Amino acid sequence: MDNIKNVPKMSTKTIAIIIGILVIVVALIVIFSNKDDGAQTPETSQTGTEQQPTNGQPGQQATNTPAAPVSPADSAMATQELKEARVVVPGANPISKDNVVLTQTGEVAQNNLIPMSPGAPQQTAPVSKDQIPSSAVKLDVSAAGFSPKEFTVKPGAPVTLSVSSIDTSTHVFMFDEFGLSAVAIGVGPGETRAITFNAPTKAGDYTFRCDVPGHGGRGEVGKMIVK
Image (cartoon, rainbow, N blue to C red; front, side, top):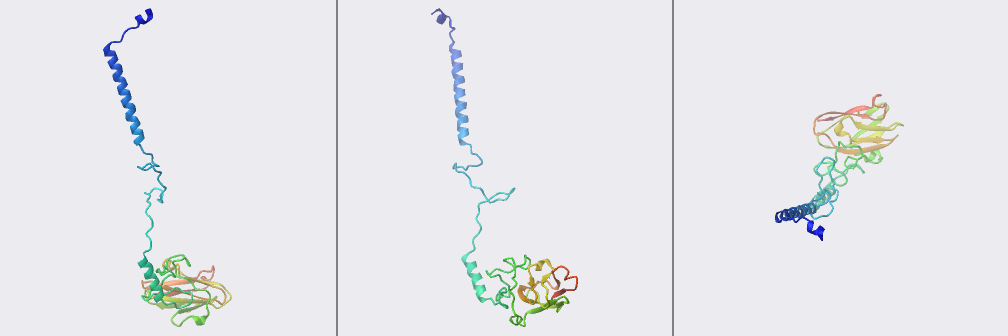
């Protein structure tokens, strides 16, 4: 009892200060608690759901925009063009009524692709020489070179070209021009194959060669003249 009596009594002012400090501490706790609840991590959206990975490239803003589908009108137009197209040699690319060489899906064939890639003019399977019409350009190739060594076509016109190996060697016809990289024909001994493509629109001389190592050096070269 004597110890209790000796405990110093706090003044009203001291009690008020303590209560004020407690109120401030509680207020700060509430403020920081609400701030943490409202924060979002990079992996969550405003709804709290996890964001899905996007298809963007590193260093670029990614998007989830889907590729635009081919419209029914475009598909129908391609189908109609193929119906109206003509094929000069069996297995060659079709030519539209507007003299544009098409792929088998109705798209414009591109001359500057890798040979035999889907969008490029396609060489045919082996055919007989009598399947090549007189309107086509016909080349024979052997160790003596190409015959004829040059031919002439009109700018932008569709061209059907056949190459026949008339010796016991394999030959690969290719242009030197990068823009005609897809126009290539490979033939085995005694074979004939063909390809249909649109000639360049720019007039000039476009050289070609046999791409088999050593064949160009021995004279298997020529040129296509566009004029």
